[in-house]
Image (cartoon, rainbow, N blue to C red; front, side, top):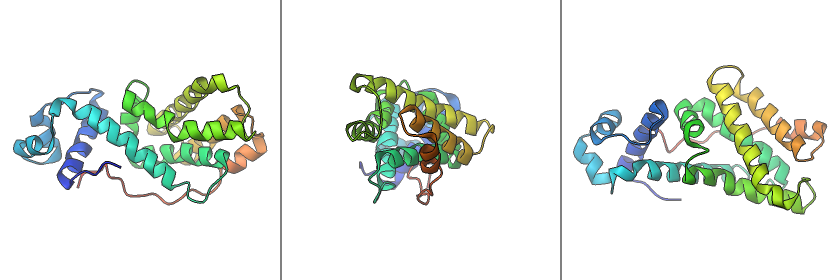
Length: 208
């Protein structure tokens, strides 16, 4: 994973929050410095190109979340259990860090870097599940299945952020329904979607 200095982490966290709150992909140096609580010189000294900040934040966002999800799979070999956990970990984090969730719902379908969230580990697990007979869909349907997965997670995050459901209920429901759509029996899907999750990890996107 790309290593950021403490100052860069602070700037990325502030930028992510501004992007999420405003639904925009550009902020000026003065706004960013104010949001991060630093001098403008700190922004220039720690960002190679402020105009590319959104792309850098999005890439770091996707990389950090994929690393977090994979770390949560330690010792889990069943692709269906990994998928159920991954879905719920996204939704739990959106509850714990609402600006993180809003950033993902704003840009998760449109930004190329963020799309790697769905095309990385989830795609590998989907293909493994298909090859081992755990899932039942045609190989040429993979892109559609990834779209189904991503849309389901984003929809659940929206439901949680708007206060319609708790992250636990929304996460378990979404994981169950996605697994059923992939060919897992409803009873087993419910059991997998209700299994204990690993403890939360501190976020590297939060400002120092």
